Length: 398
Image (tube, rainbow, N blue to C red):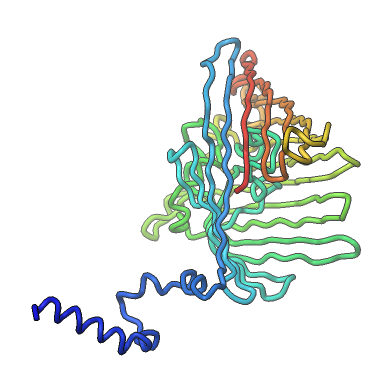
């Protein structure tokens, strides 16, 4: 008998003799990649993990003072959600975002919740900072508008994810539901002042390094409280405060500590079929004294959305399609103050009006069309620059 045939017969006989005992063999290093909880639980028939997400895309046609760049199409976001019930009262959630294809890839959420009791839950990881209404409620399929609110993106700035830990919970209170969140986080970092925007810009403080370490060893604190009444709505109050600059190097003091503060009020009400929601935010930043007038130290902004259902019925073979009309007013002032020499107002502000229509094929999928008109005034208050344009797009969970 040839040697190869003999070896094969020996292997087959060994497998038939000992195949029933393989489950009792010790775990080897080779097996480690397949001995992971989500695989083991799936093989047992008890799947504990879920995957979902959303996508959005749109067209743009804008002109500024009559001059435009033509028609374009844009794939804004493709986001993936991962969720798992790890054990009793322990949950995991994460969100991975792809913007404009793969131009920007970001881990927006990656957290663990440990439920001590329903009113007291410990949370740790990359959390969505509880500032205003939009930052934690930013999924595109929820909104009738293609562009995100200016106050939420350029003042706050959403989406703002931070590495930290804290507590959250819900408490029934005399016919109301009281909610709270509070976290210690690494905080926004250098770049808020002396940046390419030539103004205070909190979004420039969202450096990649904030997920690795705190640049000054002084964590920021953030939190939100909310009151909700059934069939009425919710109002929330939130705050954020922390030192943003690196004031020490190798243990030596190289700069003064500079603090930033954000205060926000948000609301979401319904009056019969009319829904009203929005947020108001104020920012105060300590900046180096010679630069305070140029960059400013205070900003504020507001947006208010109105949403009303025009029609609901069957469209072609789709049932319960709903057509909504929507309107948004928004304003952002990026340098609140006056020139010291002249006492005249500093401008650097933008105002926008956005009417829109949407077709919701389900709560999770919609087509939407917006007309956006906004006007801007620069730092010195030169004549207004006006921009207008049309947008059409879709968004859907999956």
